[in-house]
Amino acid sequence: MGGLTFETITRSLGQVGITVLLILVASVVIELILYFLLSKVWRSRYTLPFMLVAPAAVGLALLVVYPIAFEVALAFSNMSLKHFKDPTFGLAQGWNNLRTVFTQPVLKQVGFFPVFFRTVLWTVINLVFHVSGGMALALLLNRPMRLRGLYRTLLVFPWAIPQVIACLAWRGEFHFEYGFVNVMLTRLGLSPIRWMTEPSWNFAAMCITNIWLGIPFMMVIFLGGLQSIPKDMYEAAEIDGASGWQQFRNITLPLMQPVMTPAIILGTIWTFNNFNVPFFINQSELETSDILVTALFRAAFEYNRYGFSAAFAIVIFAILFIFAVLYIRATGGLKGVYE
Amino acid sequence: MSVKTKSRPEKTALYRFFHAARGDSPFKRLLIHLALIISCVIAVYPVLRVLSVSLRPGDRLLSTSLAIIPQDASLENYVRLLTEKDFLLWIWNSLIITMATAIIGVILAATSAYAFSRWRFPGRGPALVFLLTTQMIPAAMLMVPIYIMAARLRLINTYIGLTIAYCVSSVPFSIWILKGYYDTIPIDLEEAAEIDGCSKISAFLRVLLPLSTPALAIVFLFNFMSAWNDFLLARIMLQREEMLTWTLGLQRLQHQFQTQWGMFSAGSILVMVPVMTLFLYSSKWLISGLTLGSVKG
Image (tube, rainbow over all chains, first blue to last red; front, side, top):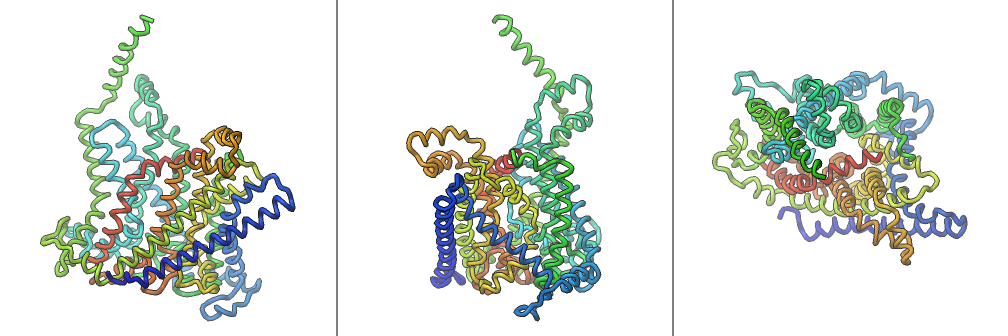
């Protein structure tokens, strides 16, 4: 029983227990204050809903809103490991950080724009394969056939295993001598590839891993969408003599639009923000394989340039924000929220 | 009447005719099965490889064999993992943190979603949009401020900061799912309960919550999985050897490739099997929950 002693068991139990107690006490205090203010002082009609929302709202304020505000402040500071206790804040410092993001290397050698374009390339490659692969498999599965359930279960495997394990396992399999990828290549008579040290092959390895990981999600979502398309539409098209491709173009794709659009948007954001795959597959820490979020992580936690990383993070967020605004304007996607 | 009953078999015959016409030729069916089998092999083979490496005896760990069950397979790696490494401790740490955070996360989301679903209080619309936009913030972006906040509060190398952060991280998504589900349950049921003398809260606890069990299960599972599988936050919050969660522990094993690949694989299998069983078992509800949220959105 390595390490699992009475002492360690009680220590983790105790710490987690204290935290739960802390949250409980904080919630009770918040609720009492709110109850007093809303129902006794302001006599609000909405006392109960506000009290119901309060704990989650306070939690989100502490862990999302405050950190973002703090990050903005940090972006105007020179905080680093050296100036951890005594950072100086100032507009000039903020301008300096922002300029550094675009003009100087974000890590040791690589600058912002190469990383940015690599991230875009990474997102596009993955999305194209996820959507086309997922759609192909969903179309193959969307018919009465034997073993359909078995195929579906097996195809979901990459999604079902924890991502960290999948990434670490793939990293092992890209090993030059003993990984199965190179072993198979050698058996096919090809020369083995240096997946871990050759920059472009390392990027390819990242893409292979992430494509493998991402197809099942799209497949399952698309399969659900395909099953909701009424069968008689295809029968009618059949009578009119439409070919398989025409049916796909003119029936399947338009009717799948409401399912595909959110899935693609979600996929874009997930891929753009994917940390695990580029971080783990890039074993030799090649700067030529970093995408924006992993570069951000390294700048912050390996080079300890906190002020600079905060500015860098805000730039990344701005990119995502512009993407979201464009998407919302193009589709009117948030209208339903207000009902 | 008689006309109707007569026309019915005709209709099915017609339907069957076209269905047969739509039915694929044996050759095409063979091709479809072939394509699916190849895809399944690609999907499953890397997972089987983990199993295969975990069963290799120590002296054969580094081999170029592609067999799934290696020659003289042994459980040596499992035994060594459990005796020489703190694997059980990592699992214990993860489990206790994850359970606590999943339960708290579900409670936070269930109560807030009730308010969002049943009242039109001021600030409701903007709050829902805010919840949606938080989904876009990359986790890595919040790491710097959260790390510095935790460092200043001396919460590094404790579970306190980690637990609080996990509790909140899945709340926005959970609120959306639960609100969507509550919206489908008629408010009349609660009103009937209120006429019978229930308060709003007890109507929620006794009527709405029991009816929402499937959605609550999805949300619990989602909270559990996202905390259980997290690497990034744990990586910056925990550094001491005896405090690691399983993701950090396995990463440290995999770091020294040459010596510990077998133990890493054994650990992966031990973590993977329960998670995969749970996932495959619940995937139907999980997916209906995901699409439910987007349809209602």
